[in-house]
Image (cartoon, rainbow, N blue to C red; front, side, top):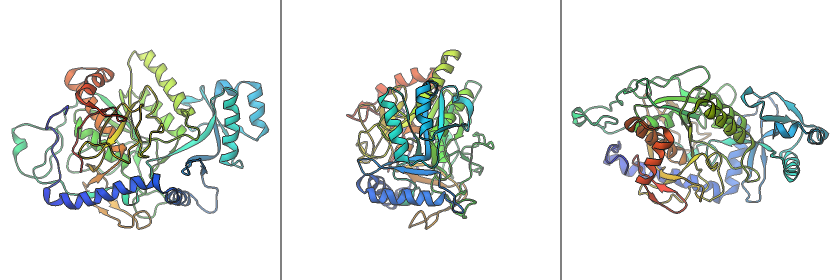
Length: 462
C-alpha cells in the first residue's frame, strides 16, 4: 500500500453489515447494464423524457449497435477535423446531405474542429455518412453524448447515506488524531506551491459545509452543480447525476488535503454532456493552469475509434504543454461495462486509465478492463462528501434524504480514478515531483493484475 494505514475506515462496525447490503445493490445495478440491454434502453428513454419540454425535439438521439446497447448522440450532429472540412469534395458531400457548419459553444477548438448539424437527420444517417468519410481516410463521427456512468443515471446504484464514526480523522496523523469526537476536516496545508488539480465533472455544489470539507474549492457561476435543474425548472428532487462532482472532489481531498482543487463543469445535473463540452472543459482547465486533470466520466464510441473532439482537445493541450514546458497529467475512469472495449478518454495512450477493484482488491466483475488500463484501485463502496437534498421515486425506488454536511457511499470506476489523482498529487507535494514523475514512482508500489494494470489500494472500500 503506498500510504500504509493513513486512510482509516470511517464506517462503524455496527453499520458495516447494513451498508454492505446497500453496496451489493449498487454492484448489481452496475452489472445489469451489460446483461440487460432492455433495462438500459429504458433508462435512456427515461433520460430523454426528462430533457423534453413543450413538445420540442429532444437533444439526444440513440444509435443502435450490434451488441444491443447502442450509444447516445447529439441529435443531427457530426464532428469533423477542420483540415478535412477544408477539402472541397468533402464539404460538397456533406452539404449534399444537408449538413452545415454551426458555431461551437466554446471557440477554443474552432481551428481544429468543425461541428456540423441537420436536426432532421437520424443518428443512423449521420453515422453512415461519417463511416463513408472514414473509408476515405477522414476522422469523422457522430457527435457523442456521454452519460455519467453506465448504467445511465443512479437508480438503486446511486449513493447511500451514512454517518462517519466518531473519532474519525483524515489528513492529520498528529497526537490530537487519537481523540474522540466528531469528524474533523483535513488541515489546510496549501501554499503557493500546491499541486493544482482540476476535476472535470458535474461541477461543485454551492452548499458550503460546516464540517470543514471542501471549503477551499472555489464556487463560480460556471462550475456550480445546480443539483435540481431537470426536468426543466427542477422538481424539488436531486437530479440523476447530482453531487457526483462534489463526491469526486471529496475523494481527492481525502487523499491529498494539500492539493489546490478546482472543479470544472462539463456535465449537467443528470450527469450528461456532449463530447464537445468535455473537450472544451479539458482545454479550459489546462489553460487555467491545472497540472492534473481528473476525468471520472467517459463513453464508448459508435465505431470503437478515438472520439474526434477529444483527439482535438488532446492536440490542443499538447500544444499548450510545449509552449509552457510543463506536462499535464490526465487521469480517467476506465468504465463500468465489465468488458474490454475501449472507453474514452481513458483509452487514449497519453491518459492514465483507472479500473475498479472490489473491497478485497479483486477485479470487479462490472469493471471495464483491458491491455489499455494503466492501474486500478478499489471502486466499490467508497465514502466521500455528498450534497443536501432528497432523491425522487422517479429515479430511485428506495429514495434517500441527505442532510447538511452529508456523506455517502458510492460504487463505480468514477470513484477509483480520483484516488489515483489524489495519490499522485500527494507524491508531488511530499517528494517535490512533477505529476508524470510522481506517477512513475507510484505505480511500482502496486502489483500487476492482468487487465487491470497495477493494483494500488488507497482508500478502504466496502
